[in-house]
Amino acid sequence: MPLYFFDTDDGDFRQLDDEGIELPTAEGARTAALDALPDMARDKIPDRDRQTFSVQVRDEAGVVLYTATLDLVGEWHALHAVVKST
Image (cartoon, rainbow, N blue to C red; front, top):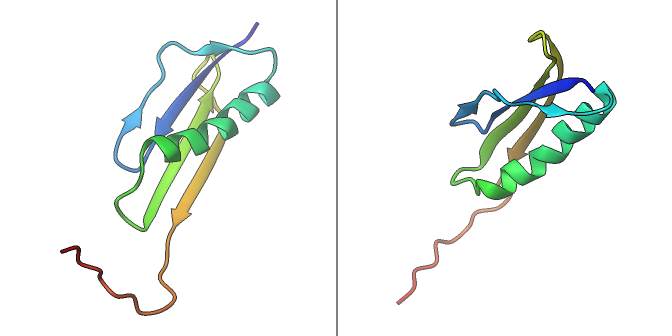
């Protein structure tokens, strides 16, 4: 079974996968990359309104086969008041 490597970037830290995962097809690797993005965003609750998360899939030869990116964007649409707790 082919071995695929998943390199991740959460906007602050890039992690290179040196172990890999055996999957039956490149389509399975694509699905795994897409599934990883919401978990990455959930695990790192951003302290800013813009953050990009990405996963690159490499094969055993080191060739990048697929990249998935999730852009998190938060925007105020009206003036907001800062609420102070007393």
